[in-house]
Structures are given as C-alpha cells and as structure tokens.
Length: 192
Image 1 (cartoon, rainbow, N blue to C red):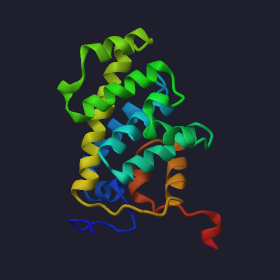
Image 2 (cartoon, one colour):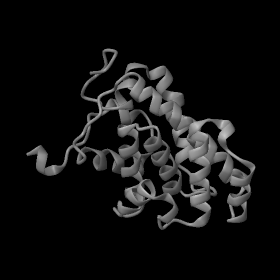
Image 3 (cartoon, one colour):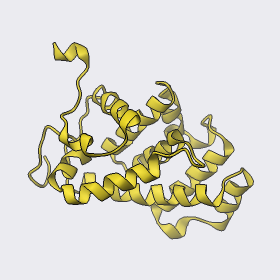
Image 4 (tube, rainbow, N blue to C red):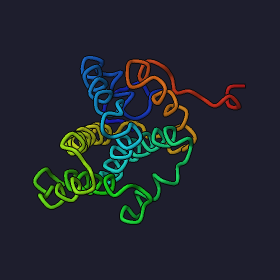
C-alpha cells in the first residue's frame, strides 16, 4: 500500500509522477536525456545500466520495467538481462560494457567507491569520458528513481506480463506525459 494517496491505476513511478506533475516533467526530461540517445552508449546499454542499478538497489518495479525496455531494444531477447544480473562477469556483453557496469555497481554503493583502476579498465576497453560520465549519471539518477518508488511504497505489479506492454510504448515514444496520464496497456486477449 502506497504511503501517500496516489492513483492506484498507475503502478510504480507513474503514480508518483501523476501525483506531482511539476517534478515529473524534469524527471522525465532527465530520463530522456540519459536513456534515449545512442551517443556513445546505445539505448539498450543505457537501459541495461539502469536495470542493473535497480537490481542492486532491490527496486523490483524499476528493475523489471527497464529490463523489459532492454528486451524491446534487443528484439525480445530477454536472456541477456538475466545473465547480467545473475553473473555479470560471465554475461555475453562487451568488455567495455562489463567495465562500465562494474563502475555502475561501485557508484551505486556511493560515489567514492568508483576507483581509478575501474576507470582505467573501462578506458582500456574503449570507453570514452562521455561513456563513463553517462554511466555514473545514470547510476545516480536511478538511485534517486529507485528510492522514490520504494520510499513511497508505490504499487509494484507482480504480474510480469504487464511490463513488456508499457516497455514497448517507452521504446517507441520515450519518457513523457503519456507514461503517467494513460492507463496501463493490456494485451489484446485481455481486452475482449
């Protein structure tokens, strides 16, 4: 049960954004700036960083929401997300992305946990200063988003079939008002 009165038809962060549209707008803009570009990192890699950080923060809603978006970008190949979460060091990702995910894991604990050696390793595998910057900023933003969702005990759907439908909308349209003003989409077989 949410700690504050929100629209219970909107799960997770969506209900909180509907509750406070004035803070939702800059948060949505930040999400678009961080996650909706292929400059340096791909959108799939950016969403995978968000997913991994949400997993480390034990934020079920954000982990599964953003994991579903990664899956959209990878043409419904969801096994990669599971492999990264279960065993990052053996997951089939590039050495560069693995190094960046290790940086994200350290930044998730606290900014001072990121080491010079981690940064050198990421650069050795081809990470640019922009890639490292964006990894740390995505991590910081998702620590905030995760704490927002869980700190207010927003409704978290356990029906895993609900996540891919919204993820498809975000993959196609980005983050914005449509996320919190429209009800959760339902599969065609559930409509009739």
